[in-house]
Length: 297
Length: 276
Image 1 (cartoon, one colour):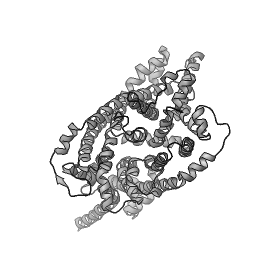
Image 2 (cartoon, rainbow over the protein chains, first blue to last red):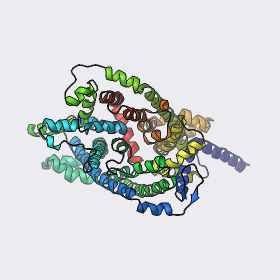
Image 3 (cartoon, helix red, strand yellow):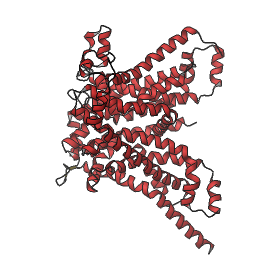
Image 4 (cartoon, chains in turn brown, purple):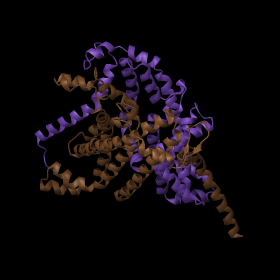
């Protein structure tokens, strides 16, 4: 008798568990999980989105290695990663060192440096397209003002500078973001560690390099991984500023993917591209998770 | 504590002011250029406007339909955030307080959602939206945005629920309250900081989202602010004064909101990002 009541109560309990999870799960299932599986299935077919699908095995995957633009998109992504590791994580670390040096007014500068992070990438991209404009752009106007007119070029349509120019904007946005992550980690370092260094007369720069940096190293690893996975998923800035131009020198995986799927209607091939990208991002994410586990103290 | 050398302080503040200028000058240039004519933007790109006239702003507001796009973005962002917080809190409560079969599997699926990039599902998501005839309604963005955000929100909220001592809900249960009552009246008010974190993160991600809004919405009157502004720049690509005005109109309110609530916004973004 007692047992029966408990079972009935448990069943009621179980039912409410499902009811509480249902709204979130059903939406998640229909709009994320199922599409992941369907995209995977698409990758084995020739499909234009309308006409009947045709099974072609791994052909879409072998095409990935022959598609020069696809390979170039990965090459560009690697360059972009190298640049943003310096311009986002490296600069962010330097900024964290600056705002955590014990001068007054750190809150003001921290607030200021973080500002670009919250603006829409599209808006930032459009603004910087103007900054880089050859005729009236802020950059060239400043170069002219300091008599360096010869350096004033069309930054975004020059094959040598376009990718760097977009990476600089990425750094302009995200340096403040990594600064904030590092600053938070530095704040968690016990105060008595610096007091000893203060007594020894260690300079702020030495204190940062020898006390703070080693203690936030785990967070640096997390930041590097966040920066790399973020770079693989980049889209907004590139699409708005150059969309692959000039001559695919700024083509990245997602700008190419959007063109393949939504302009060329090559859904099957695009799906194979997205499966490969997903695997790369998931492998990186496992890495992040492992690194992050070390940061919890 | 040592007294600081004045020279070091001067160098320090000089460096900090230069970096601040690098952060803000592009935006300041954008705002004051929005008061100039196209001719003076071309002739004297650095010069301040001779007079402040809001002609460009009025034109951008009217021709660029900024008010329509902002309204759409506001509606989509508010609906998504409200629904997402409610559904995520419900699920997080269940994961933290109710034991039921298959819970582990469901939790792992949501955790997987933390790592799946948008590129892993947007192709087929578009097909599902067409299949369900959701195209060109706000639901074709709201539902995907909820689906993309629940994993992180559940993850954050579950931690907040688990931090609440079980005596709280047990005493309510002894008083005869069911899960719905306990969730709504006892537990939800206690996770407000978690709701704020998840809410800030969701609001900003949805407000700034571009890729899906670009691909799914065709009707020009239903575009969001980001896509609307992008389309506007395509149609009036040479009317720089008006585009500067449009960009300023989007940027200034966001910066004001950020300065007012900067603490909760920063912690929302950072906590959301480091966990997701």
